Image (cartoon, rainbow, N blue to C red; front, side):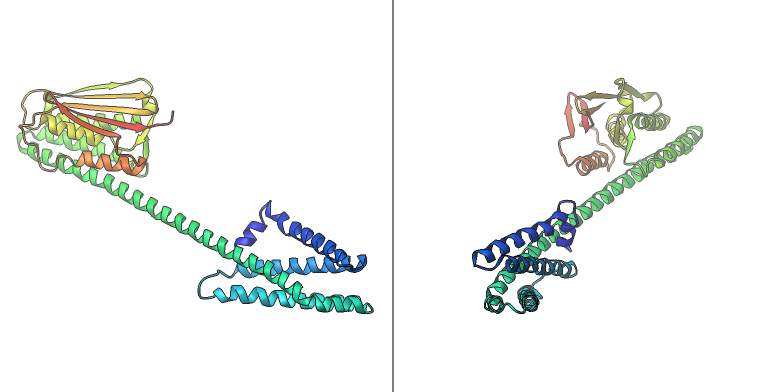
Length: 346
């Protein structure tokens, strides 16, 4: 199978004819050197090369349906020996009939049987050994390819699971807020239900998309902020700075929203005054840079479950880019900052 695939390539089509020509010329000049007549040497070498090529093609067809392994290993030795012996015998019978009146030549063919057999057997054994090596290499390549496919499928499944976890995570928080507003402010609760419906409808459209434009991401962030403003009213201030030209960049879908959700939780829970969330989107070199800042009070406890958004973003970045240095977090002077770098094409 593997030799056939090679011989059928544009380069491999010249392999068998080339070997046949070299074999013919080598046998022809060797026979002349041994004192054989030119006509006899020419015919002998021609059929000797022809039988050799026939044996190679037969081995090629055998290995097309025969994968060498430990169980059938002895056949790798036995079959080339039998094949070479049969071909040398047939070659001798043919030339004995061809030169039926040349007794000296017939005697030479008879006495050279063993040497011709050894030459054929060695060549065919080398061919069988080559088939074993190619088979092992091809098997390793196939195994590596399958492992790569399994790894990719596992990575895609984990990415899908992370995205599916984010939606319920945000949805449960919103439903809790709606529950709290139902009695205190029914109208605000209804507004939040409508906004939440629009947001989920929009984000569901990205389910089949691994990457979306930054313009779409900003649109979903705006819808998210509208939902949060129903809950927090004038207390939530958003400072959004978008560098010109970044809207066309492609980023992993819904990658920034968990960072914003985390900033709102850390910034607004446990406080009564206004809180400003700052977002900066810009491109520097081969990276799309995202900065999210929010006030942070280490003395105030935040609701259970906070931190899932950041860990999910870190995991998604590792699965997509294979790097752990793309998300940085820092807290200084009551300010919590998250810096995200997304590699983009130059």
